Image 1: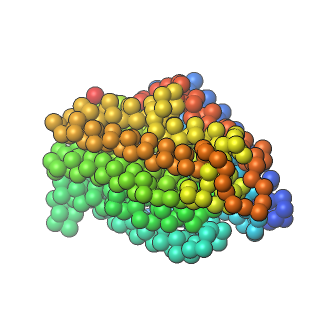
Image 2: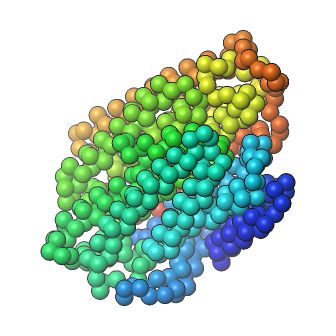
Image 3: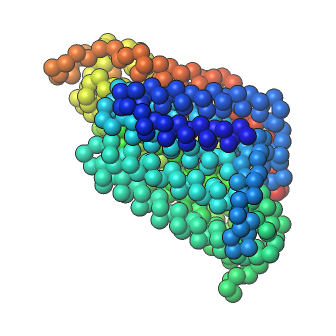
Length: 519
């Protein structure tokens, strides 16, 4: 009932917030969102102490906080309200709940128009995000997956910048078309499985696929059908990640979205894509990802990951807008996740999952810090700012710490995540003798990251203050800085003690490797 309670609180809380007067909507929504935030932290502690070694929910493991209720039947398949958590989904659900509360607090200053609708949509989006990470039935998962698009479309299109309508439509079209292509690929597998499955439960579908139950469909042999479905689903999820060259919607969405929405977009929404890739492509169709059916497949995936790392970092290097710099750097960071997943080693796959959590925290922190700077200076252009360290030392101090976290400074979560990915990918059996080359090329991205972040900090933060304004530039209010401090503490906590998440992640990803003999 715990997951149902989280869904109910956020959904009913959204309804209450829609009806609340604008002047109280922010405080009401924050108070409501604190319930799932605290609840998820308690569930996290329970998971660590009671469920940590129960394995992968799709590969025979016992899902924690599981609940299954028969829903209806469609095309001969039973549809269930089925939810539960394992070592992959538990930290992502907690990240969602905690980051939403902090994003709502950071909205108090910049959002001054139609607050009740804004905060209501933020809570509605949280409902769908929790559902995405908890659902264990395909149709239920797909409802939540598509449910995220609607509030995000309105949040960008109504409260965004001058080109908000263009950015919102572009975001919706890209992700919706990608979802449809993914949907076709997945349903081809379902009908290929035929009578070997009786429900749309993800665990049952995974067992049938890994057990060789797939039959020919419309004259297409099972092996070819698997490869075609893999490509369709990879395309659908890769748009959401996003990876090169499917990334073009992301910078527009980030730049036009209000800062709290950018925090959720980078911190959680991008992880929907990598989470789905792990669950569907690398768990259900692991033989395709490992190159057992098409030898070049892992090389192609690794190349996409490394190109995303280098291309995203190079584009960030060319930007002058702080928000656009962080947006492009997210593409680069997601490339490490792709490389770690396709390595099919304990450290590679575990590090990729850890990177999802780490990047969610650090990118959220970076966007929040940029938002506080913008609220104070009314500009995000690096060339317009100088000497901010003297005027707003706490904000700048946290921003610099977050930037070092992005660069992979030891004792911060970014270092642990990237180190694990590199160790795991260097000897990846799926990439053979090319594994060190892919890893070395990806490591070069760290150098570029350090270059553009140091350049941006040197120009905007240090030196004499020279921003020409007719208003006072001083320390930000406490409620703007407090969420930054909380996120920074979480980044340091996971950097100092990665096992707070990594140990539970390993217990969930190792069964994926055992299916393919990767361990």
